[in-house]
Amino acid sequence: QKEVEQNSGPLSVPEGAIASLNCTYSDRGSQSFFWYRQYSGKSPELIMSIYSNGDKEDGRFTAQLNKASQYVSLLIRDSQPSDSATYLCAVSGANFGNEKLTFGTGTRLTIIP
Amino acid sequence: GAGVSQTPSNKVTEKGKYVELRCDPISGHTALYWYRQSLGQGPEFLIYFQGTGAADDSGLPNDRFFAVRPEGSVSTLKIQRTERGDSAVYLCASSFIPGLKSKDTQYFGPGTRLTVL
Figure 1 (cartoon, one colour):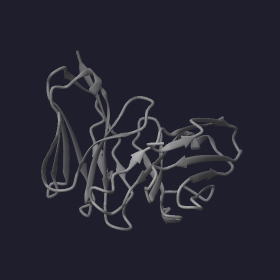
Figure 2 (cartoon, rainbow over the protein chains, first blue to last red):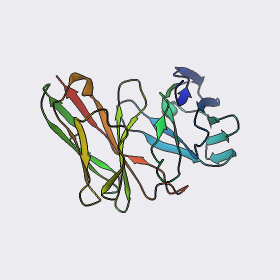
Figure 3 (cartoon, chains in turn blue, cyan):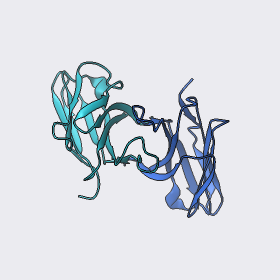
Figure 4 (cartoon, rainbow over the protein chains, first blue to last red):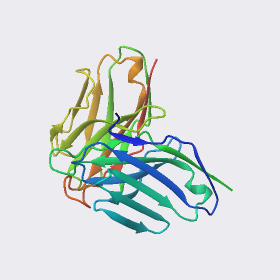
């Protein structure tokens, strides 16, 4: 079993709709959770970080964390063509000595105009 | 500069050669990380520095890979006797205070694309 799992997609969403991206992780000691966006040929760019159970909203983006279910999600409202990219879920222990990020393989999202 | 910088952006080498990849982290960031990303995969952890010392090198695939950060800022990833399987994008990231929530965000550089022929 992979430590961080994501559906590789591709996920196609009409422009203006809500895109929902999901991620599960295996290490119950994980403390910090991140969503990165990666355009083709570019490096990962941080979209959201979340540390506590519940929802965290930032503009059109909402991250959701459920530690009991070991589940993290990212919602993108009012999807735009510029949101087309690969979205990487990353997890770390965030305790001293366990700071490395473990990434999923990413979900490729395409917004259809 | 404002962000993490990496040089060179592209490196083509022949099997068996030695290569060095450089990373300059965000000013003031104490932690520096190296990752490797193959096509269609997420970044894979290689090594993490806190200051000058390697706090975690568990991701280095074998003893051909070595990294240094002698003054606690710039880091160099060194690969000896390169193999075709080493071809990947090598990413460097830095963070302000690892282990402290909200200060532990890792910011990535543009990467070095290594091609071993």
